Image 1 (tube, rainbow, N blue to C red):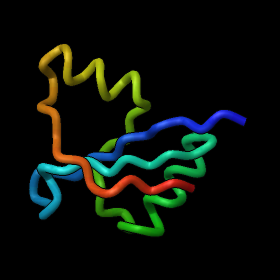
Image 2 (cartoon, one colour; image 1 turned 180 degrees about the vertical axis):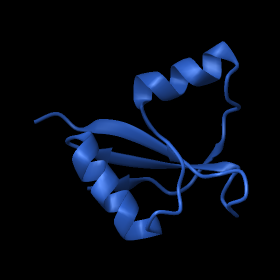
Image 3 (cartoon, rainbow, N blue to C red; image 1 turned 90 degrees about the horizontal axis):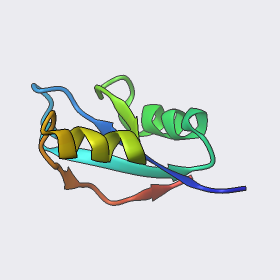
Length: 72
């Protein structure tokens, strides 16, 4: 099976608002499960690698600092 990159952002009032959490997993369900284990409900959005890069290239979102990658 192929692993995929998923990017998770945090809300504007969160201490990690300028960061993104990259999780490498087989699917979004596994990545989200890990995100809930790490941060509970204290995060904002999830993006596939393509979606995340499209948001940055379109100017809709600034590139954020990456936290240490988590592999599931």
